[in-house]
Structures are given as structure tokens and as C-alpha cells.
Amino acid sequence: MSTPGGTTVAGAGRSVAAGDSVVYAAEKVSPTVVSILGSKRVDDKNAAAGGGTVGLGSGVIFAKAGDKARIVTNNHVVEGFTQLDVITNAGDRRKATLVGRDQITDLAVLEVDASGIKQVADFGDSDALRAGRPSSPSAIR
Image 1 (cartoon, rainbow, N blue to C red):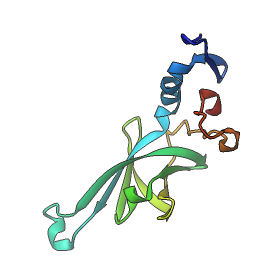
Image 2 (cartoon, rainbow, N blue to C red; image 1 turned 90 degrees about the vertical axis):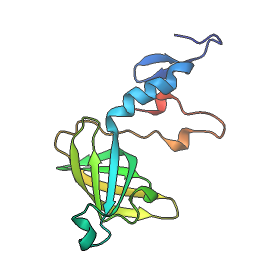
Image 3 (cartoon, rainbow, N blue to C red; image 1 turned 45 degrees about the vertical axis):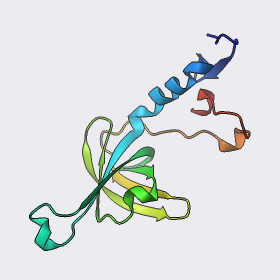
Image 4 (cartoon, rainbow, N blue to C red; image 1 turned 135 degrees about the vertical axis):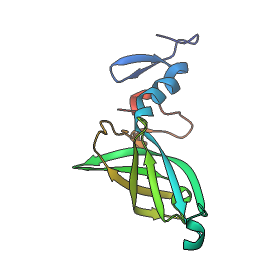
């Protein structure tokens, strides 16, 4: 398939028109995207009344080892919360544990039970990219 300019992008055993590369990448990675719910009770007195702080963000399942799956997200999504939950693309809600976080890079890693998780995101090779050149679906292996 080619674009009006004749550009095609090879990716995972098929050619994808350059204009469709974002659609292809989104379809490939969407099963690994999760929602992250953070919560923090203000104090025990307000807990019964539902008092507290809540937040919502997103993350990507990037690794699975044994019975655990790891999720990368932003530090600002998890910062300050005492309880973290993950909602998978299939709608399953799971308790998450904060593995680590870094304020400077604004990255955090969570861990959840991996049961039922069949796919993880495969990040491309950043060494293969050049400044000013967009990533292609072939970088998503």
C-alpha cells in the first residue's frame, strides 16, 4: 500500500501506508494500555464519609515475569497516593504495588498480578531513531 506520495512503511510482516502508521501502532499496543486509579484518605474520620483524594492516569504493561506484570507510568500519576489500582483494557481491576519512581524523569513502575494478561508492549529501539524522523510501525516489534 502506498500514500499519495508513494511512501510505504514495512511493519511486522505487512506494509502499512505512512498515514496509517499511527492507527497501526495504536491497534497493536492498545491491549497493553491500562488506567491507573490513585487514592489517599484524608484521615480516618473522613474515611467513612468517602473523604480523600483520588486521581486518574494511564500506563502501559511492558513486562511480565512469572505471576507479576509491570506497568510504566508517570511519577505524577502515582505521587502522594497510598493506594493504587489498575484497570486493564479488558476491564479487570487489580491492586497495584509501587516498585519504584523517579521525580526527575517523571517515571514510575507498578506491579500487578499477571493472571489473564496475555500481551506486553514491545518498545522500539531508540538507538535506531534519528532526530526529526518519526518512529515507524517497524520499530514496534
